[in-house]
Amino acid sequence: MKKATFTIIAVITLFLIVVQNTSCTKKDVIVKTITDTLNYAVDTNFVMKSGNWGYFSFSTLSTVQSSTATYFNQNDTLVALGQGYRLGGRLQTMKEFNINGKVVYYKWKVLSGGQFAAIVPQLKYDPNTTDNIPPVQNVDFVTLSTHNSYNGSVLIQDNTWYFTRIAAVVGTNNYECTTSINNYSNLNGTTISTQSVPVYTKSGYIAIRMGDCYSGAGASFMLAECKIATQ
Image (cartoon, rainbow, N blue to C red):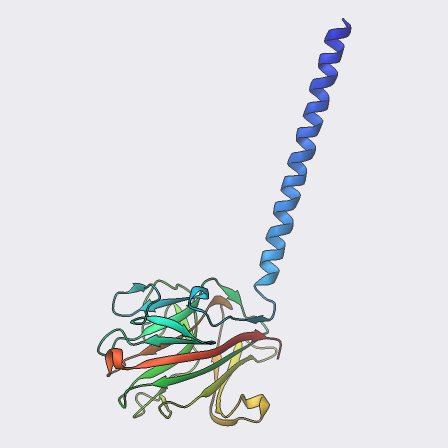
């Protein structure tokens, strides 16, 4: 009789231990999930290393491995090459970020080989799709181009650093995209372009693409800085 009582007590004790451990495990999972969600919206300074970015090729219509023929890091700057005649590519973060109420900064330049090439900072929703015009799977904040303007693109100079600042307009779904030379517009840069763009879905991959590069692999673009900030 004592043995049976001892066995029942042992089983009950084991059951309570299992329940307690299971509850702790669930709590840990919930805490980690909440933490990850919050991390998407915090200020983020992206590291300019190829392993932290993907490159979607408009030639293969897929992401490609880092190499001297596709994209690579040069000191603290990412360099991405054209993948064929009028076929560029898109640098994009490896995961989605929420930019609600935030400001996105890009420091970039294009080396077009003396011919037309377009550069477009964007928020990409499906990183494995191409970029149609008008946009379907992305928001294009502004289209800039070397050599000549086309379809309303902003004319820029080859091999010149530009600073693009994309800021949420308080109380609206709009973001104001300002591109400057010498520095960002809020840091005494000289503004060359400002436009307002509606963004209804505010979570996506932070991206910048080069398209329609007539010099093919002779064209490239460089990304020296990209960050999400509160101002």
